[in-house]
Length: 53
Image 1: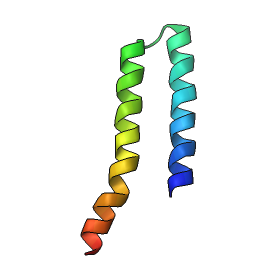
Image 2: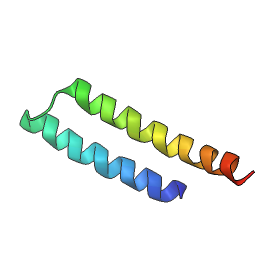
Image 3: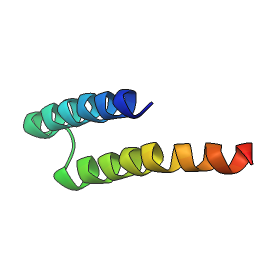
């Protein structure tokens, strides 16, 4: 699950970087999206462990 999460983050980062370079989104929006995605990948396994108990 961790490897898939890292791959997803890298794909999202690359796509958002392209959008920033093209001027379609701001740098702040890119940072907000990446922070949310990273937090989700970190929190999801923790919530699954809590739910399993």
